[in-house]
Length: 391
Image (cartoon, rainbow, N blue to C red; front, side, top):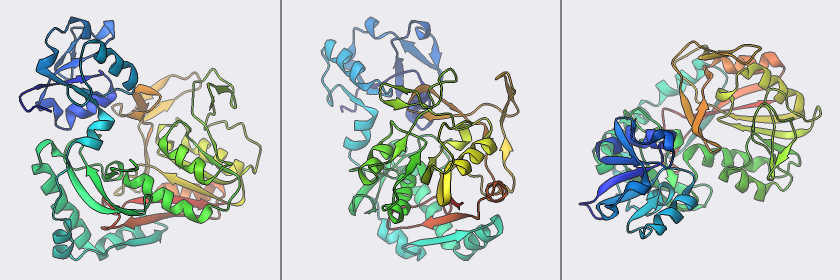
């Protein structure tokens, strides 16, 4: 990409908003979008332009920040632009922009961090005791954050061992989906080969012990994680939420619809159920957990990843929904990325450590958090934690 070119982002949606807030707002000149409603409006302070009105394409390098990559790419080719020279998709941007290698080994030695730490906790108190026991881990991550903030574009590399690829790989670190103060560690550290972030790599690693299990369900179906798990678990069942008007179990274009609040599966259907960053987007998460418990076999295991506020004892409801579907906003609305919607998914709950007791109250015999840090595998971010529960 020529350094003298201006930057244009194509797609005035939630992904574009995150790119702008993570540093591209300082260098992007325009936002392109085909939507007539958005023409000549300002998106995060940047003018939205109709691509048809552009007559100076060679002044810009275009980054497609929309999931409609093929359609937009074809449109750009019609304008005479060349991929990688004149434009690139956000996915290829991550894969192809040279990543600066950093002296990770030096930092590891300086702070004497363990190569790997994995342990179970059953309360906030137990978690905090681990955090206090390893202060050097926090210092190490703060040093990394300080380094990456100085890298052009706030985008750097972390060389580590990918537990999925089973080899040393370069992980990409960026500040997307954050306020810019530090990386969303669990959502970054993408392996440049397989594309999985740190959270996904660890959940895949935990699932290794369940390879022999037969009946497994995951609350997603169009994701890379689902496709990878399907290779290991041929009987894997996945689904997406496709709207309130559909009956559970309906299949549209090969995608099964299920509502987490009313799963259309028989009691005791699955040996394993997996929910990866879904529960915070459910209007009544306690009801969703009861449905999970109902559908699990006795002795079955539930794997749960959620953004948890580690300083909070109790979960906080951000949005309530009444019987008519009307939403009451108790906190300003927050949206997370959604592969089925450019607008993202509304966050209903900020979770605290009471999630463990709520799982026990529902009936799970065991519930615990799995704290994991690894300077070798790139499991970073204030002692990341996923949750597991056994029926």
